[in-house]
Length: 434
Picture 1 (cartoon, rainbow, N blue to C red):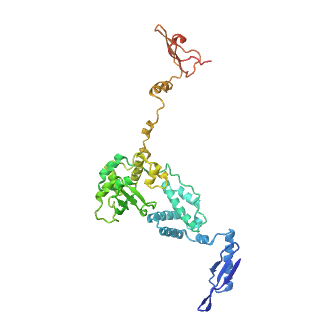
Picture 2: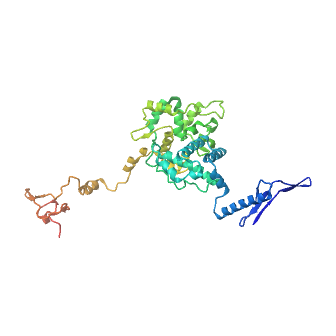
């Protein structure tokens, strides 16, 4: 163990200079590095006492009896100071300003309504109580609040300001079946009517439904990104404009490529926006939907908006026979469950027609006779009916049921009149066989 105080010395122009203030040096058993720290005093005895306090605190930390110094300092700082450092780090990592603003708004609301001022105030119980009181929030919104708070605490844990995330074991809100907004895709007929009423904005709608690009991604497309002179025209989506920050090549349908060729400026700049003034706002889109006779929200509570064009793109790929892997690649999803889940409109799947394509296991004759004669309908009598017996002379005689008779007797076909005293057809036994 090393533990001593000293005044730093150094030579300047051959002369030895000794510092005024004392410094401490220590290394405990089990440590591999010598720690040096300033003590800010000219008194050797006071410096020794200060160093002894630091050494004892360090020994408690190594024994697990107290938290480390960064954790102690973080516990004393207000949560708003930690939040400011967290947001500054996000900006330094080039995260989008809208994402940072959303995080700041949600986390500050939690601080205020949960009464979190310092780390000691944060608990899973207080968050769960706050969440239970939010009657006006959808499950998706509650999920986003939990994610926002957890992102701050995970960052603090990573930067040694917190031992562990206090919300780590808090369960997620069940979202399936509780969606407040359900989106549906456009049918082909609805798209035709919408484009007929859109006017100048029709190109924006057509580009969205044929590329799957989101509104902001579409608005960021420049003429330098559009390549129409190649055999298979495409748009090169830059990583700075995409949601997942990955560049991608989006192939264009020939009809859309021809329309873009007609509006391309002859001497336009490469950074000029392609769809400037051609992407409708939600208010303008509602006007187009009303003019086209398309309800924003149908009887099932499913709505259409601009993002529904991306869902329509996925459904048209599905109906065209594209596999899940191909659709996931074209939709630029990281998880195939996104492609087959929220972006799939099950009402447009060809389910009824596929049922009729199932193989037939019986021919028409067997279906009309064998299965038909063994079907018991709701109007079938509870007891066996009498059988009309036809004799050889053409007269008929009713054979009555006598004795005990089962509720449903099995029919027996009599093939030879000689063995049945002239009775032909179906004969119902009057009593079960012995």
